[in-house]
Each structure stands twice: as C-alpha cells, then as structure tokens.
Length: 384
Ligand SMILES: [Zn+2]
Image (cartoon, rainbow, N blue to C red; front, side, top):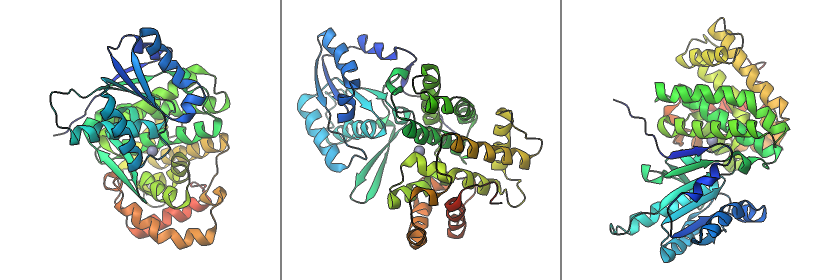
C-alpha cells in the first residue's frame, strides 16, 4: 500500500500574486527577510494588503539557515498578534522558518478553539520546493534539525515568475541544479511511484531545456516560469518519496566546507548517478535503466542502458559547464589536505543522513569515500 499526498493549492504563472486580492483575512503576518524588503519584493505583498485595508505586521529578520532562536522570536511575534493569515515570502530559509513557527505554536498551544492561520508560501528562488514539502530544516547548534510532518505543508503556494526574475546567475545555477537533483533522486528513490515518476520526468526535461536560459537571461519570464514550476513539481515528488545520497553527501560537504547546497549537489550528482547505475561495472541496475529512460526522454542517445547512462552523465556535465559551474570539489577552493582529513567525518554524517535509506543502492563507507574522491576532480564520464 502506498500513498501520495497532494497539498497545497497552487496558484502559478504571471500575476499569480494577485490571488492575495481574493483571500479572506483580517490580520496578516508577513514573514520575510531584509533582502526582500530592500529589493521591494515585500512591498508587492504589503501594497495589496494596504489597498484592501487589511491590518498586517512584517517580521523581516529571518536569516539564512534559521536556528531555534529565530523560531522562538517568530513564535513570540505570532503568538502576540494571532494572525489569521501568515504569508512567507522568500527563499527556503524564510519558508522553513514560517513552517517551524506555525508548527511549534500548534504543539504548545493545543487550544482547539483557535484555528491555525491560513498559511501562504511565496518562494522567491526556484530551488528548495519548500512551498510544497512537509519538511523544515532548523539549525540547532552545529546540527541540522529536520522537522517532518504534514502539518508543515502550506495551504497555498504562489509561484509568480516575476518574483524570481532578479535572482543572480550564480544562484540561479546553484538552485537550478538543486531542482535537477531533487528530480533525479526522487526518480530512482526506493519509494518512487508512478505519481512521483511523472513529476520527476517533467522536471528533468524542463531543467535541461530552460535552466541555461534563466542563467543567461534572468529576465526571460517564460524560462523563469518553467523553472519555478519545475522546482515546485520536484518538491511535490521528493516530499512524497524522499531523496538519495547526493543529498546526504552534499549535506555533509556543505556543513564542513560551507559549499552552498545546490552547488554541493551539482558537484556530486554525476558521480552518484554513475555509482547508482553501476556504470563502471555491469550497468544493469534498476536505477541505470531509469537513468537511460531519462536520456531517451531528453532525446539523447540511449540505444543501450549503458549508452543512456553515459548520455545523461555527459548532459549533466555539459549543463554545469554551460553555466560556468566548478567541475570538481577541488575547483571550489577546498584544500586537498583538509578534504582528505575531513573525509571520514563527512562519510559518517552522510551514512546517517535521512536521505540515505531511499537511495537505490545501499552505500557503505568505502563507496562514499570513492564517490567523494571522484567528485574531487569532477568529470564523471572520463573517471570511469
Ligand atoms: Zn536539495
């Protein structure tokens, strides 16, 4: 027996933000960060509320990688104002913070007379899919606390391409590769289903087709819309079927060497695909066949499973190259001695990571060390 949960309601496309004109509200809390205020994106929301004569307050000091102190600050704000509508406007950090605040308040305030607020998530990057996932990542000292609960799901997600038009090229590349990674890992997850496969296939096609355009010309709103939708669809897939060891290895690499999440995934993705496919061995795993199917969908040579996997590896590499991304971990400024020194620690973390159990091939420490070392130089195809 399996399940595929569908929530929230999604409003997407040009002017999707206008749905804020329709939502019933008396008292709104806008959760956002300083950058959104500075660049005028918060104004786009508050102008609508102002025109409707709805009372609102802005909580704008959410920082990247929110920690428990951030959540406690938010809880105090939300508890004292009791909003009936909460709007989270920002990247994954802002949406995750709002999720955690609403969730934590519901836990400590089991007052059933007070309805939880309607929760609207408005992503301003195309990457995390946080607007449709039942996860929230909160920092607790050096550790990352991952909250997992359907209660974390927003009620409404607004995907307005105009809100991502000004994302700089480097962040567009990093977050776009994160989207690709979500789809690739959901597609071969041990929990994958017809439902997640349909989403993942569409996402992979849209990323290869539209991400380079978003990187080259951020103002191309059609390409931005396609990537914004892809990010959300990938979130719908992986919130249901989880991810794999690219994410486990990227979480550890990012934690130790401060490599941004999407870039860390981009650095590791091809070598994980090669390992999952057993590309250097028989290349006859279930994952290999699924990768070859993706190559076929991308109109790449895929007459045999091995050729299909090779085509996908070349395509991933080409996508990174096209956007001027580093080929290997060594190209990100990490020193080889330090990398080797921290390898065992990172591998230990990756083995314990929540994303590891659904990876199509169960890794041991030896396999993860090998993947990290191959990703050190990059060029997964030549590596084999
Ligand atoms: Zn990710």
